[in-house]
Amino acid sequence: MLPARNLVPLAQLVQSEMTNTKTDEGLVVYTVPEVAAILKVSEKSVYRLIDRNILKSCCALRHKRISRMDLERFVHASSGMYQ
Image (cartoon, rainbow, N blue to C red; front, side):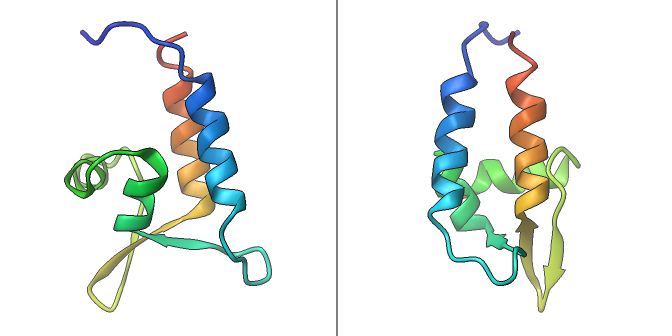
């Protein structure tokens, strides 16, 4: 079992990282490397989350894309796990 830790600063950090991206009429889609940079994890970790259906994604011409809404859901759900 993972040790309990405070993820509220992580959620705030992710929110600030996501507001720095360009938007196109409110719809934002991230690549796996972008999500890895936002979450400060490896790309392999992001692919694991996708493979385990923890983080939702879609395919666009053989490339994984993660919507901003799905990323926000993941951060919100994971921040509640350790409180």
